[in-house]
Image (cartoon, rainbow, N blue to C red; front, side):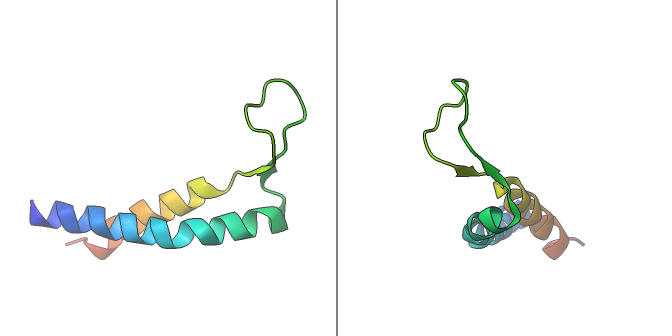
Length: 67
């Protein structure tokens, strides 16, 4: 049970650290969702690169705490 808590904490910490980096990189590589029609809910461009930070955080949690 303790090991699962460490997996979660590692994943959360890495994700929290990488999310601002992903937000900073997204405009530089063109990974932005620009609202150009009525379907979009947001009014300003939104970065679409956060999934990478989440994936890397989960991966780090599993790799760091692997047996």
